[in-house]
Structures are given as structure tokens and as C-alpha cells.
Length: 178
Image (tube, rainbow, N blue to C red; front, side, top):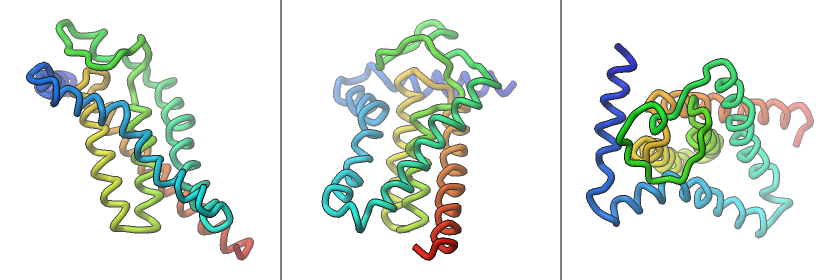
């Protein structure tokens, strides 16, 4: 039952592709390029003042890496899942993708983790990053590489990672009087 609902949602969203080059490019941009673009402000902050911003940047990057390379990989080990373009016929695949596991979404976990770490420091900027993260996740479905549950779970793991690292960092700062 859940798989049928998820399949219906996937097909609906994936069928948004092919209508126009501009829209397809927008989905591609959010699915593949936006996660990199979201890191550019931190590169600027790091270059402008390592001493002032280094700890903050380290915290945000640690949250993203913790989500992507620990939590996601644990999820993929215990819940291996085939990508939709392998499972279904006639998927509009906008991204060049090799066969790999899809659950949970690593891109989505990463961007939601950095968004959460930012939100804990600055609510206004964090909300903007959450919106961008949502667009990244939805675009990963539209472009044919993830199921909706992959995105939802990736977002939850990313939020959890951001909270764990963000709150853990505050405890460490208090202990060492940073």
C-alpha cells in the first residue's frame, strides 16, 4: 500500500519533466548543483576570517558530513533499496546516474543537516536554507533518482544530524569555555 502511494507520487512528480528545457534545467540545477551553491557562503566566510568563522564553518560541515557519510550509509546498509529508474520503466531520468542504493537520499540529508546547523545559529538564514533544501529534495524525485520516502528520510536524518552536532558543539564550547 505505502509503495503504491509512493510510486504514484513519484510518477506524478517525474512526469513534470520533458515539458520544457528551462524547467528541466531548473530541476537539474536544484538536484545536482544547488547543494554545491549552498556551500559557497561558507567558503566566503572561511576565506574572510578563519579565526572568526572557522568554528562555525567546521560545525556546519561536520553536521553535513555526519549526515551524509555516517547516517545515510548506515541506512543504506540496513535498508538497501533500488533507485526508481531501475525499478520502473519509462522514468524520465535527467541526471547521469550509475546503479547504486537510493535509501535514504545523501544529497537531501547533507543539505538538511547544514540547514539545521545554520537554523540553530540564525533562524532567518536557516529558513532560506530549509527552503533550498526542500527544493533539492523534490528535484531529486522529479529528476528520477529518488523515491519520496528516500527524500523524507534523508531530510529527517539531516535534521537529526544538525541538531546532534549543533547541540553537541554548544556543550563542548561550554566545557572548554570557547
